[in-house]
Image (cartoon, rainbow, N blue to C red; front, side, top):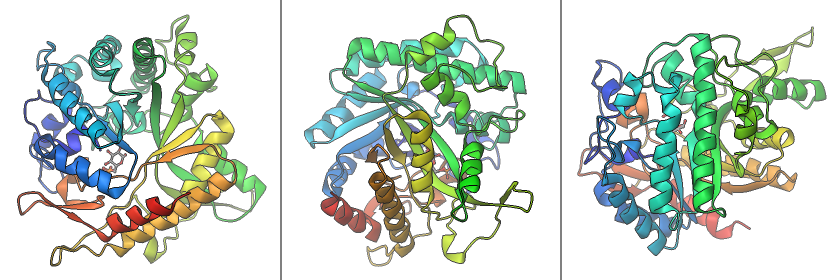
Length: 428
Ligand code: BG6
């Protein structure tokens, strides 16, 4: 889960998402995250339900807005709140996996240029120092950034995410480099505090899927997944982050103008211990008569969900990990995967057969990838709870637990909760 989507606004300073939510029409259903799931007060119940579910890791994010006030002064709110939460996770026998940035940037930083300004690197370094000082004896698994594809690509380009500001191609490239430098500093700080902790970097993608078994088609799908941006509208890219982090150089044709001597060596020293992949869907491709890659627009009725972009395409949990592992040769964790469907609460029950099918079919693909020796170390379903789905608001549901926004935020176990519990019990 991520801080902004579940916690509610108690005790924190404003983030770019608070600002966006105030703009008329920015959140499709007109809701906001001022209360969200009130995880801030209900974390004990939610952690207990996770234990009941049978998972081993509890993934959450810390919000920088609980560590810095609206003027950028350090505060102790985050230290106190998250220490209580982490202690509760540990008491329940779960392992906390902490993401340091899941999109809720303090407003004052955005005013200074956000990720396009070099100041962002010093900010994240200081933030990591505070986290290392207060949490490195409690948390041994960290993720620096969640999905730069979204917070840069959608926040600065498609602009239906915060901060919803436009940037040129050169500025976008600069922002990419700042993300990598900030990751590298955070990685070094966290490892200095505890050399045995694991530090990762999470990417998301729409996996290009070959419609049939054909070596040329497979190769073209792979190339498409790792292609570089053509212009500023095209920042949903993977290789611009992972090539420097893992291989030590930017892909050919992509060079930020703020790259300095020594940067790439420094970035590569902070190669993630594993790659986090958020995989929800894929797009089918075929070859035309000239052997060019063409998208297949056909969508089966049973592939559709409650979000236009999220088709149930289980093959993405086979081909996604396969393509990543073959290119980067690092262990993988599926840090997010989940289905968004309309749920009906009837007499305390939610029969979400579509989500159950989503989950089981994707996990079958994942099993196949593991059998093919792709080094997959973990899988996290997104998400435990229905939550504030960013620009979609509270009405789009991903949870295994239904949250009743009309009745005191009561939690109900969906059929998918029991199905996943059963899968976990029998997974070997
Ligand atoms: C991932 C994010 O991109 O997708 C999550 O890490 C998000 O925070 C999930 O909830 C679902 O996507 P969306 O765009 O529908 O909120």
